[in-house]
Length: 201
Image: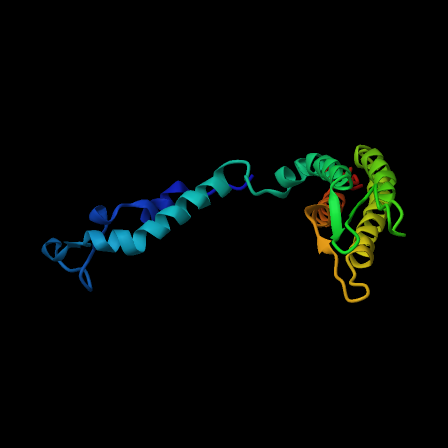
């Protein structure tokens, strides 16, 4: 854990009325003058915020540390799976001329099939390998999320593509599928796993 001398932060956090500026070349105390209050408001206040932020980062377990960030990756991955599965039941596009609502599990009147089922299968394997604290499982998960996001992009272009001069109306479900797939990719790229250090002989 990094530490620093808090005395070094005193110039950053002193209010303007306590900051003094000496005359040039060791002027006598009579030449000491206080900075106006506007100096504190315009120049020192941002430095006060910077000093507080510096204290938070250096004295405690850093709140922006990668370890803390990766600690939540398992929950972000699980949330992404729930969001992806739920998005497959929401409308993806609406074809107004045929009065058809297409979702991941219902595309009656079209030849899109049920693309959401592929997301269900990939999500299942993602959860399995996401919860296994092994390096090989995390590597397999990279392949799974790559296939998942590729399938989501394919569905976006195929289902939302304009045909015969008519463009389907994109709905929230289609965007949420892409967003959830990106979250799963991030969770797989930054897994919460501790590698054993090799002992030096």
